[in-house]
Amino acid sequence: MNNFSSLCDDFFVDLYINTELELPTQRDTVLAFFERIQKHYPAMGSFYRRDNGEFCLEEDNDSGKYRWVSLEHDRIGSGVSDPDDLSEAYDQDKLILELMPWMLSVNHLDIDSMDMTFAMDFECGGSHDEVIAEALFGSGPFGAMLDMPSVKPIAFSPAVVYSLTPDNHTQARISVESKTSICEPRKKDEIEEQAISLAFTIRRYPLPDKKFDALKSFEEQCRLIEELMAEKIVPNFVRPLTAVIAQKRIS
Image (cartoon, rainbow, N blue to C red; front, side, top):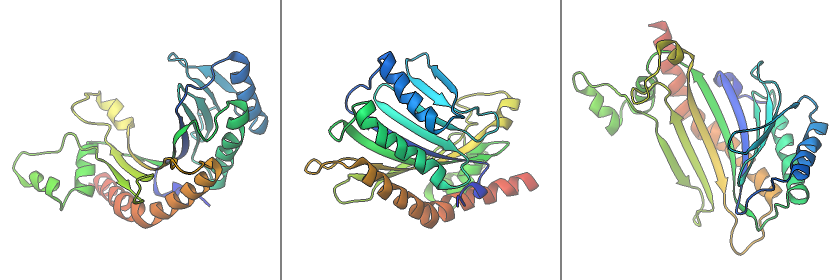
């Protein structure tokens, strides 16, 4: 089951395959690829091309729960919002990985890297920067500056990348994004609708001396991201954020 959804207001499972070469843009190739996906997920009925030339197929997102697949310049994306079970997202991702070699000509030589991302949104009124600062920086050196009179955080959106292997081919990225920084002024009603976003990504690069098995790597990345989410991200990032948000709502 997807236990991460209960910890936030919205939960997203996204896969991105980053390619070395440009992806196909021919009409027949693009339509055949998305038609094959739609046969598997009939509710994905909204197909469109963005202004930058990228293609996207998605479900109606009015309910908040939806699927999407995109073809960008050099990246294939697949995502599910608020799945009841993680397997709902994983099955879609596996379909993309199975289709891309023979429908998009993306093979092991063409893959630059592959990203598996779990993202969470936390609805929060007021200053997101203050919440992030209190939850994640309160007792650290960055938080020490906040002890000074009249000092307040105005741009706290940390992002950190870790190498998980000695050869650096498996990496983890953690980011927490504020949507209310005074560096980007917004109207009050727009601020209240925004959410603090946390994203945790496991990226895998192919090793130069081994053939990259995308499906095998995907399964390993899924296991790793679930483990690290439960052991590291939830207790050290999610719990502190939700505790401070709850405090702010009460006060």
